[in-house]
Image 1 (cartoon, rainbow, N blue to C red):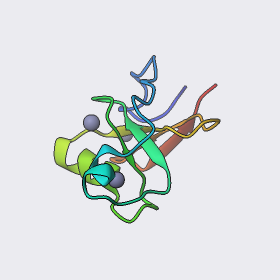
Image 2: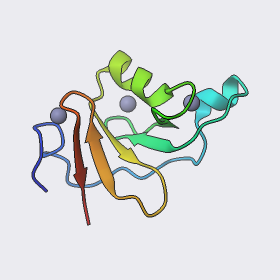
Image 3: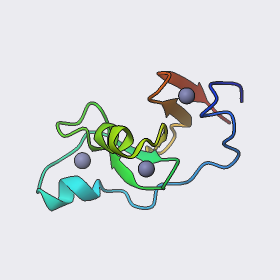
Length: 88
Ligand SMILES: [Zn+2]
Ligand SMILES: [Zn+2]
Ligand SMILES: [Zn+2]
């Protein structure tokens, strides 16, 4: 895997802890796709979702890299470099 300095050091992908966006559940909202933060392991909703909780989380906490939590999708994305990398 060759990508930006945030994605390169990641050897093991943190899997989704939950198949819900915990923030959306709190406010009784819905989401489109789920993403997992590779810094702390929290699973939140994607940029296509109305609340974009993962994007907010990454900006707020300075956690740069997320993975897709959707079954069959194997990629990482870095918010700092807008870099997307697929993995096996
Ligand atoms: Zn990066
Ligand atoms: Zn959400
Ligand atoms: Zn995080």
